[in-house]
Length: 243
Image (cartoon, rainbow, N blue to C red; front, side):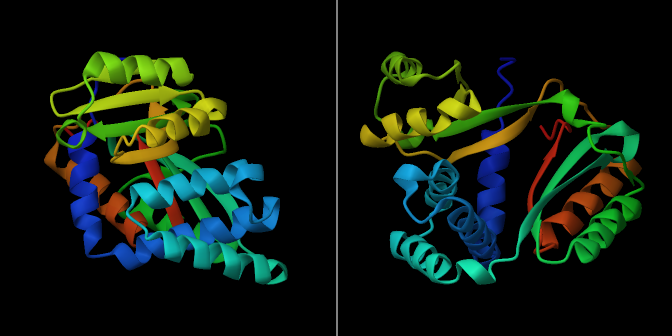
């Protein structure tokens, strides 16, 4: 690990998203519906659903809301027509961007994503054109202020549970796992009462790119804002160094 902390950005996004919590819950609700359709309503036997529940909890979704979503999806299995689709492309100055969407209308989503790239002076590429620059990992971020456990003890807990890497930053701890080990590590931390600022399987850039040109920064921010506003977009990954 390079020790590249994303906690400040996560914190900023959470504060920004407090005003748009309804959108976050809608996004997670769709993910719950698809996970239940694919693997059933029991998270103990449905790995994807357990991952979505972890994401819901890290976004402070109430347990009763999660349970209602699962029950609704279980009774509505035949009506769930969302499908996952991924877009890859380049923002200004070659910034690599991956967009995960969950949609009931692929034509609409493709047009909106393409428009977001174009308006930011970027372009959609072919599948695989940038994903090789990222590693798929389980990532758990822990706010130091919310964690009473000593760093060494937390590290041993995470590593014993199957984590690949542990790093300490000024304001946070980061735990990285293989995607297949993520749920086991997350559960081990949860059992010890560890509060997690973020817990999800994500795409982590192998290298980060710094932007100094003001026009490029504005264009990139426009693309990211447009994607953030799109209800079909579940997640956006990029290798821009925001710090």
